[in-house]
Image (cartoon, rainbow, N blue to C red; front, side, top):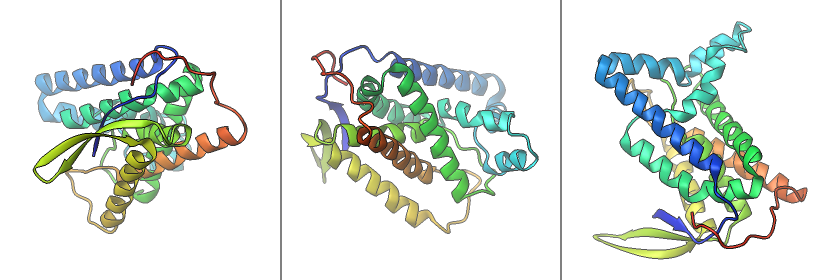
Amino acid sequence: MIPLRDANPTRRTPVVTIGILAACVVAWAWELGLLASGGDASLDAFVTAWGVVPAELLKAWGAGQVVSQETATLITSQFLHGGWLHLLGNMLYLWIFANNVEDRLGRPGFLLFYLAGGVAAALAQVAVDPTSTIPTIGASGAIAATLGAYVVFYPRARITSLVFLGFFYQLIDVPAVLVLGFWFVLQVIDGLTSMGMVESNSGGVAIFAHIGGFLAGASVARLLVARGLGSGRPRAPASVG
């Protein structure tokens, strides 16, 4: 099931969402430039320097270096990607779901929420595999937090999704709670099946960053709803995510 768009109008242009998307594309272009000019070694060095390396992060914090480049990677890693599919998949989910959460929280509030969600997601991955020397990169954790908030704020929003049935496919409108609930269940299954597996030098998908980000985003959204915050003003039709 691949979401393609939602029927959830926003009141204003999602400036922060567009800015994040643009920043990820620019960072990806920079990565491609490094690959073209310096080869794999140059790109690997850049990703290692600005991605979250759990072992290095905890080593720096253990030495009292809280304000350090290693800490900064909790933010910078959110804008780096490991391939075209990684980038395009993340940007699709960002474009569909983030604009409504931004509309609900306001631009400054959403930016803070997004970055904090990405940090929480990265720390979840660090907690699960603290000795890993493989850098974690990607917007997936922050986007997962956004998905968690979306499903709390708009559980019945209709999401047009591409559903594969064997060799056939069909476009259907599905409630957000089913689309994103299905996505989360898949992450949990993948996370459970990956536990105890030997780390590979080639890396892989940071599943627990997805899980941690989603739970963090949903928890914050529930807290805001319970306190009557982040309710937004009545929406007037504008654009469709």
